[in-house]
Image (cartoon, rainbow over all chains, first blue to last red; front, side, top):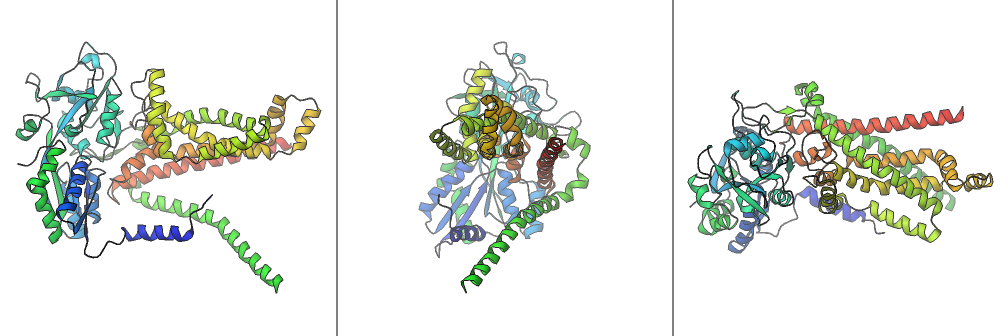
Amino acid sequence: MGLAKPQHIALLFAAVLAGCPPGRPGKHTLSIKGSDTLVQVATGWAERYAVVEPRVAVDASGGGSGVGLAGLIEGTVDVATSSREIKPREREAIRQGRGLEVHELFVGSDALAIFVHRDNPLTALSLFQLGELWAEDGTLTDWSQLTPALRGKVVLIGRQNSSGTYDYFREVVCGVGADGHGREFRGGVSELSGSSEVLEKIAGAPLALGYSGMGYRTDRVKWLGVSGKPGEAAVLPSAEGARTGDYPIARKLYVYTAGEPTPQLRAFLAWVSSDEGQEIVAREGYVPVR
Amino acid sequence: MNLSRARIGERLIEAFIFLSGWSAIFGMAAITLFLLREAAPVVPRIDWHEFFTSTRWIPAPARGNEPHYGALALIVGTLTTTLVAMLVAVPTGLAAAVYISEFAGRRAREFFKVTIELLAAVPSVVWGFIGLMLVGPVVSEVTGAPLGTNLLTGGLVLGLMSAPVIVSIAEDALRAVPDSYREAALALGASRWELVHRVLFPAARNGLLAACLLGLGRAVGETMAVLLATGHANQIPHSLVDPVRTLTAAIAAELGEAPRGGDHYRALFVLGVVLLVFTFALNLAAELVVKGVRRRGRS
């Protein structure tokens, strides 16, 4: 039985208090944190940028758009990635708390796909039907209301309320109710912490219906076409559809910084918008800016 | 010279033990104060009727809406998963403790004790994966549940986690009953079942209750495993295989995102206070039960 030596614990504490291990002199670290939708992109950027600019280390992590922006508010991250536009109160919190202005950079678009089990006979839904499925006061709860070929309660799989995907999906799909207020999600949705977790769960549950970025598609699930209005033709998620806006559940992806960027940060942001940076956005299933 | 050195050593040890004893009280007070301080500012802004009677937990509302903090489903989620866990862990845990203490041979006992202590040390996130990957699919296969992660899966995993704690402490409690009790009972012609049921259980009841309570404490406070295994759905379960969300899972999932000092952040601390009150009430109840049993035993 080896107990940890007190010196080791003290060292651990020191490391935690310092926030990060002492870097090599001359090595600049940029921390980038936020959207889980963008975490693969951010990690991709970090890996490639280490080759492009060896003097700068990029430290990328996820957690949700809200987590990244909270980090920007607290000053613990340099770059916040977000799959939604920054909220006015978050912008205000940075202005008041740190005295800094927020800068926004548009880095790509994302189409949210509606996923079902591979054996599900359904091929398309309208935005209206999705709203009735997901909203608190919605009327659709059973598969038999959508297709005669399937019976049983629709098992809804979503993201947890820290994710930008959750926010965006609610805004587009639940929309606004008769009273003029945004409709909330119904209770009983399994809220999972990661995009791939959603796909994993749907793959194993024949009655499941969930949403996730189209970049996360696996061959163990299938996605549905979505029509903007009942009667309109349904559109399958695609890069082209997301860019042109033909696919109705697509959004823009951003990175946010606070205040005047350091030279290292400015160079990194320029590189993100370059062909090389955008190639990584495309590689992860999203639609590049150009 | 030697004597005085020994005396100084003794003093130091005494002081150390004294401080260690009090540190538990200090720690408890500090935790309570911290929780209350973080939760306090939101207290006047929370609709307490809604908090305890509504299932609408909407801390990050849609644009233009007010947040809602209805924690009923979270409270029910914690209570139901804990109940399922205890239904699994208490009978199996006590039975295993009786077997190890009274029926197993010496070598078998050593083997079991080591194994069970190892089992008690398995990290909770590993239990979560076991729930997600092994228990969940079996539960959905057997019950036909649409999702493998639900109340039953969460309860089973928590039960499996709590059982080793219960076995380990209950076994110690049974071992602590003097052998003269056993000899006397057997001499009076008691069967082994009668010995366990009529002599050992009453004699070791405080220790057994403590074992169950520590198991219960582990189940109520467990976070990672339930986060992964319960399905994390904010609703009051209507069946054993409905997904649920517990207080601990809600705190773990949302605290990272909630901006420090905001209402949502503080509301999560209110959940923490509720959890603390639960465990406190449980311990108090158990204390009273033990005292009651003792008093009745004496008269």
